[in-house]
Image: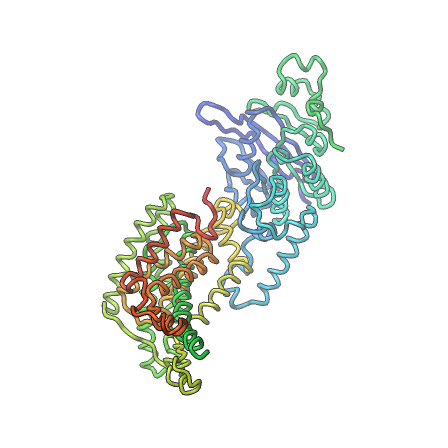
Length: 273
Length: 337
């Protein structure tokens, strides 16, 4: 029986010089949920993110994935364990086609060894075909089949983000961290991305954690939202309750605005359809 | 009419086929240069010496095979010998990498440092070759020398000019086409090849995607070993093995890789053909060909040779300089960020 808590962060801390970037932060993400992580600039979201994803070693505290202690493990190991992330600025293999970008994941099958390729060509061909079919399925799911054979370097910023989401899908992930997936993406593509996240969550049971500035995006997608400020947990609850939480509004907009009853959800002019 | 035909035959035998053969040999070498540059990110000054060492090993294996009475009939025995030399060369390259390059990769040394290290490797390999096989030239081609010989063709066609195709030339072109096709299939259609391209494209992302960097490095050296042995042996079958001449191949190979754009396999091939044909055409004595094509009154007196053959390396050098001035990224190269 799998535990309901997929990712558990306990009392994580890290200091850079004298600055406590993340200070005794705890966080729990339930299996099959879409969690949101928000906070004003400098709140420590990205640092927490990088701690979980293995880019920094925490000074104290630990991270558990599916009951296993993964504290401080390097990114490529976490990749194999199903903890995947995308980047604020999408990264891609620019000279490989979109489909080939997807087919780069997961590496390490028998087609990988050249001796194996020589000795068992049939099996390698089958795996190659399966990999290609999987990549095509994902391109289809994300509705970007038309760009399959274009070099990834020629895609738009938003298409690259979709492609990056596709890369995480290739790895059969347990949990996907999306780092400001909305940043620098036009609205139309943002809806496509939001739609893909929702469908992946509902239809395929993917767990997500979104680090995001776009409140509308958070409100639209997240089951539970955690707000950080100054490296610490500020507040936690449903998207609705957090976005009208006075402490949260204060942290974002400064003292005084909260009293006027301006909810955070209203800070964006555009709204989701 | 028969003048034109004779002229064409003359050009084909003396310029087109030798050019294609030389271009193919350069291409196999330049592909190695470009692979090392693309994946390992440095220019290997030891590359020509790699061709030389691979050929020297092949000659030794070939002599050993011939001693045991092995022969391929009309084809040169060296074709078998080089199959034995390839794994040995792969091991030598991988061992060199372990002993030298790996250290500099770990400390993230600049490309210039790698270049200097490779110059050291070049000197060492040079010494090893002298110890192994000496500094003298050797011809190691056996089997039939010609596919189409001058005499046979003249008897058959009744024309004044013969068509001459050496076995080694046809073999070179055929093997080069097969090897290149194999390389492109590998890079484009297999997971290992894709991993190599991915690693060359974005090293950090490749590491994040679970690509094992040590395997990519090994794989690269294996490919470079195969290409080097092929290039060296085919060149040697065609023109004989002379360690000193092999050293001088470094310049045209680099010129070819740079013309095409370092890191681009297609570029390496196109660049090789450009370098090979420029070299041959500029040092070619056009007198005979022009005599066939022009009216008798205009037939040239002189050799009609633009450059004497001693200057053929100046051609590569000139091409290199012009490309670096006009289009440093090469024909197919990515503009570096």
